[in-house]
Length: 147
Image (cartoon, rainbow, N blue to C red; front, side, top):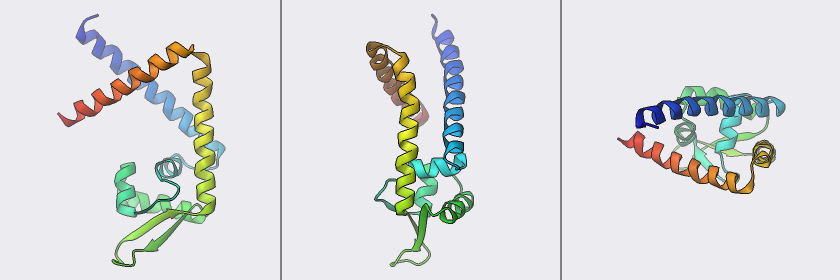
């Protein structure tokens, strides 16, 4: 296969994979009564982590105003808490509540179960090869984004 054909095939497969992943995220979020944006914010937070809203916005690649609306929903659902930084009151810190940590744990477990269903279809050797290939592809994509 030529490099041009490889690139074309990779582009098609990447798009298809992205669409399927997005569908799995949508289904998982809906099952947990979350929006996709809320799911992504909760998934990106660590259980014991307190971070500024600005840092969180960068992590999930959202504007501060969009993140504020998402956090409003998560606060209303009792999953996150906001507080002012004690050193700089202009900075808003965000942390998971006990209920938020449980929800994050639940959504992570559910998301892993979804992927377990996929792994179960593959042989062990194929599954390991897929992981190695995905890691290499991820590294190559990061390198390509730096250029």
